[in-house]
Image (cartoon, rainbow, N blue to C red):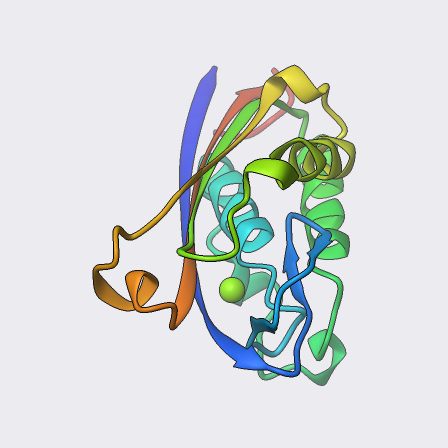
Amino acid sequence: MIRTGIGLDTHRFEAGRPLILGGVRIEHDRGLAGHSDADVLTHAVIDALLGAAGEGDIGEHFPDSDPRYAGVDSIELLRTVVARLAERGAQIVNVDATVIMERPKLGAHKRALRASLASALRIGEPAVNVKATTGEGMGFVGRGEGVAALAVATLEMGSGAHA
Ligand code: MG
């Protein structure tokens, strides 16, 4: 049985924080605000996986009211979700994601983001795709106030998995 999930996340830019996307630190004059490391791309991927598995959302699994997740490396949260899916007999078929950000330009970093996510997802890089686009100057992304990320994940549920 094949199942698909979608993930969407947004975070606000904040001075004095590192910019981390897909577990990769990107040089920029600002980072993203959040309880965790605010890795908006990894959060969208986690929600896509949880969605495909019918497992709720990231906030249910890792509440931002929980001090355990203050400043947490979101790639570790992703690894936790991937292990949970594997326990349920679910295989990740592919993940596709889009980062919507005005600056910095992501072109030079897309391969590194893909490699980082593929490693955490425990699947080959060809099964992971990271795209980048801008807000064309419109809205909160276009004004450089924050970043949005979208992701889709496809899972193949094993025979042992409950539907
Ligand atoms: Mg988030």
